[in-house]
Image (cartoon, rainbow, N blue to C red; front, side):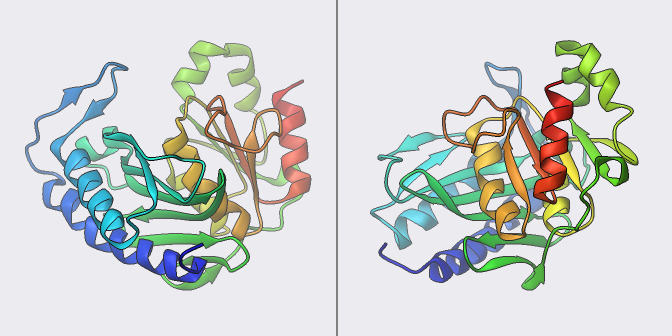
Length: 258
């Protein structure tokens, strides 16, 4: 690699901080909203933010490839590459709700090595680096030690879509764990990394939604896979489960697949 993981993570951190100024300049302000082909909304803030990040990465790491939600793939993702979601949670963003995020991942040979979740409106930045641990605003974080599902705080992301797709599973999930909440997007996963909650069940995600979470969760001591327990790759089907411990993850996977 042309730079150390520490160098790369520091660069990503600074780029994300600067890039945050763009969505915050548009937050809770009048915006033109465009519906994409998949009915998901996009704004000028999404596109300006991704362009800023892409340009900053290209300037510092010209040999690296980039895959972003708004502008697609530049280069060959089999080598050193970056994955970007400029505003994860655009529906939150356009609603004036502060839980939208910014996601970045650094990968090499298809393996996520750095994961970053930036929450611009909360001024929180979660970073996980393989072999170097995880931090929130520079302070070390780690997952909780919950090992039994009946003691777990469980977040069910994209609940209404899950209810339509699999009402029987949704009904069972509404009774799982000690405490359940419905959520969306990246922040519940970051809360697992920071030791606030225990499990997130998610679905319908794209690579730029889940790949930036991998290194963060793993560096914090947690586990993140697809619903079959397989590692997440560019080819994964978008069903994701994040858990604070291996034991909890095993139990959650069994629950999802019973």
